Length: 110
Image (tube, rainbow, N blue to C red; front, side, top):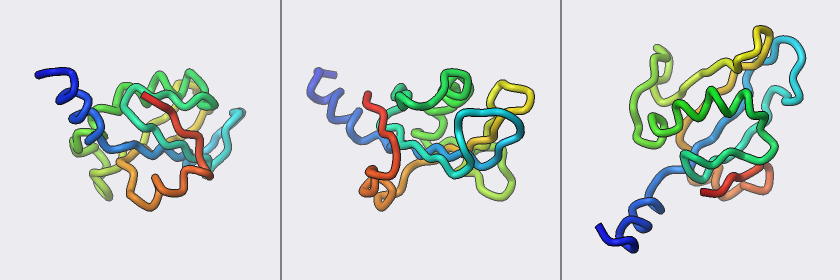
């Protein structure tokens, strides 16, 4: 595959939305805080590295549409930060209207 074709395929990847849904204990993030990842390697600058360490293990599963283990919605991955009393985050493919409103979120770049 030539470079131009490769870059065109990369552009087809869906952005990812991550949202904190639960907080137990101390954390710099707050429930409802949301980020858009423009690519599977795109750590948002304001997201802590501990959370990113866990979420980054699942970005390709989300982008490629692999079903999660969640019985109520297989399109959502719910993941806990590594802190014992940390946070829970939901991760899923972004919808078009969420991408259009990037002014309310931090967006990472490839």
